[in-house]
Image 1 (spheres, helix red, strand yellow):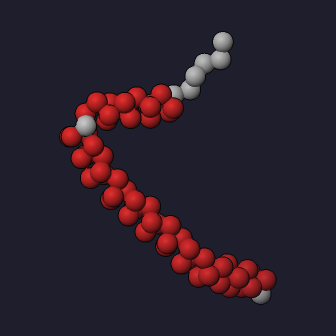
Image 2: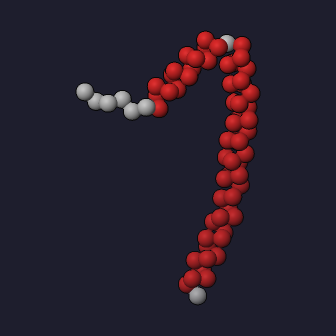
Length: 67
């Protein structure tokens, strides 16, 4: 009986939180679909600015060794 109560509580929690998860999934996919064409336009018409942005992003993803 305790397992059934836990299962029902988990199911209610999942159903209650599903709209929030769905919102974030849709928002992140939408942002990605917007960012891809925008990045293509910037790289096509402003190649120097695009190289500068690439350098900024690449430099922040690497670990800087401590001296």
